[in-house]
Each structure stands twice: as structure tokens, then as C-alpha cells.
Length: 278
Image (cartoon, rainbow, N blue to C red; front, side, top):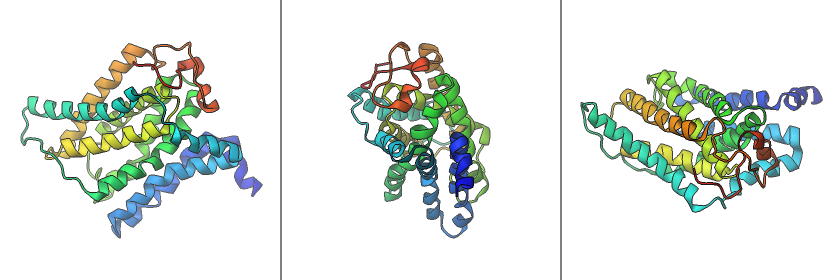
């Protein structure tokens, strides 16, 4: 057993990504049985993070990892950002769709219980991506570089879906997907640093992205939608980088409180627990 666990202890971040991919990609062949089985893949990153932390950090590490889900005292501003920014950018994409001469108008999508289930299960992704991987990447890289690296790896995690009929990504433009997912990652890191490493806010932000894009961009051809999203989210990420620099915050001399893992980022982009407005 020690031989099996040794690589995880020695290379925990690499082990996390390998496990996150493996614990998700095994699900794709099952989609031929039922698309609903794809929901199992959403918990892959959380399982990967839990396994790696249990091996390398024990109970203390697990308490810190899962405790980030309960970090809710971040100020009302960041709840507004988590819900409002995805709504605003979805509306911007819809407006751009019209300005470019829409072949068909956008329309409101339909809500279902499945959307609510997916919204809740998104925590399975965020506990891995922002709960574990991002603070590890921030420990040795600038916030911008860390977010770009994570964005590319997060994008690649979805790759099999582009080749499996019945998935939302099937047959869609991969470059556009990589662009807007990496742009998401920059804004996730920006929010993460301003909320003291709150996985709760990251989960709400992720869920709101999925919800508003699905609800406000109905009727647009998926490929066109992907490129519209790539443009508006890239512009938003660029605005954050220009206004905040590679640290993604305006006050890099402050420190992160309440989380030893997040505290590693203070040389790059410290922030107070309640957050500082952008």
C-alpha cells in the first residue's frame, strides 16, 4: 500500500489531476446507456481532492478542504458578483448575437429539475478545482498564471464530451470552449482571492454561469453561442487583469486569513477574509 501511496504524497498536485481525469472519464462509455449517468462524473474532482488530501494531509487536511465549502462570510458584494456577473455576460452575449445579425433571435430556455440537480452537484467540481488545485498552483505562481494553467487543465477535463453523442459539447468548437473556460478560470481566481478561498462562492458562481447561459441564450446555434461566450468572457477577464494586474487584486500587501493553504498566496495576491471590492 505504501508503494501505491508514495507517488501521491510526493506529487500531490499531479496525482490530483490524474485522479480527477480518471474518476470522470470512466463515466463516458456509460452515456450510451443513459445520459443521466454523466452526473456521476461531476464528483470526480471532489473525490480526487479528497483522496489526495487524505493521503497527504490526513484529517487536518480534509477539515481544511471541506471547510472551504462553509466559508460564507465574504460580504454581500461577492454574492452579487457570483450571481450578477454571469447574468450580465449572458445578456451581453445575447446582445452581441443581435448586433452581429442574428439568423434566429435568442429566447429564454426551459427550467427543469435536472438544472437544479446539476447546480447542486457543481460543488463536486469546485471542491477539486478551486478548493484544492487553485491554492496549490497559487503557492508557486502568480494568480494570473495559476488561473490560466488551471483553466487549460479544466478545459481538457471536458475533452471526451466533444466526441460522445448526446453530450452538450458534442461536435462544438473546441478552441472556443478552451477560450471561454480559461477566461472563466481567471474570474474564478479573482473571486476566490477576494473571498478568502471560499468554495461556496465559487460553486454559486459556477452554477450561475450554467444557469444563466442555459436560460438566457436559448435558440442560438451552439457553435455560435460558444464563440459569443468566448468573446464576452475573454473581455471580462482582460478587464480584470488590466485593472488588477497579475495578482488579480488591488492590494497585494494584505494577507489571506482563515486558511493556511490560501495564505500561501499572500506574496502574489493577499486579500482580507471579508474581501475588498474590485
